[in-house]
Length: 274
Image (cartoon, rainbow, N blue to C red; front, side, top):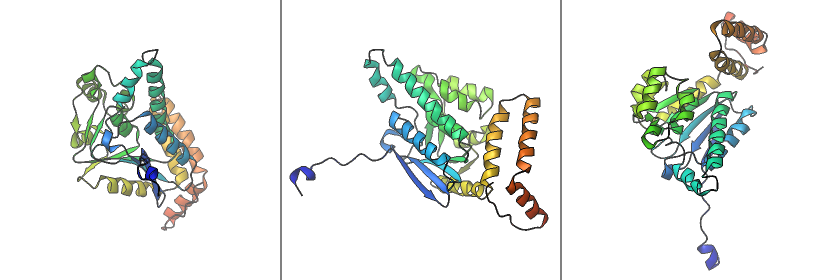
C-alpha cells in the first residue's frame, strides 16, 4: 500500500440508502449531519429510486425513513444561497430545484405502490411536504412538523400544496402563516400522520403497516391508489361517475373474481396481481 493510498479520502457516503425485504423497499435519507435536508443530489436520488421501483413487480410497498435525529429539515438552504452568485442571482437554479422537488413529490403520489413515511424527528418545510406526499405516515412520539418558511421570509408555497391536501384549510393556514411547529399527537389529530408510536419503533411500525398493505392484490392496490387521488380533485358527481367506472373495470379483474369467490367459500384468496 502506497503512502498516497493511505491518505486518499474516503468516498462520500451515499445520500440515499435502499434495501428491500419481503417486497418492501426501504428508502433511507442519509444526510444526518445536515438533518437530511433535500439537496439537489438527494432529490435526484429519490427520483431515480422511485422511477426504478415503479416497474419493479417485486416491490409491493415502500417505506421512506431517515438516518439520524431528524427526518428532514427541508431544502438545503446553504446550497440554494450559494447560487445567488450566479449571473441571474440564482433564479434559474431555484426554478430547477423547485421543479425537480415538485416532480419527485408527485412521483410518490403516482407510484403504483403505497408509500409509508417513518418519521423519527422533525419534518419541516419540504420535509413536512415529503411526509404529506406519502400515502401513509407513522410518527415517533418525539416527531414534530412545521412549515416555518415565513420565519426566514420564504413562504412554504410548494409544501403548502401537499399540506393543504392532507389537513383542513384553517389548520394548514395556521401552520403556514405562523410557522409554529405541531407535535406528533397534534399532527395525528389533524390527519397529517396515521398514528404515533413510541420513540425508536417508528421504522418497524411503518414496515409492519407496509407489509399489511403488501399482502393485498397489487393490482387492486394500484387501481385504488390512482383512483383515490384522481377523484379527490373532482366534483361530487364527477367523482361518483369516475369511481363507478373504476369499480366496474375492477370487477372484471382476475383478482376481484378470486377474492369474491374466496370470501364466499370462506378461504384465503390467492392473488395473481392481475
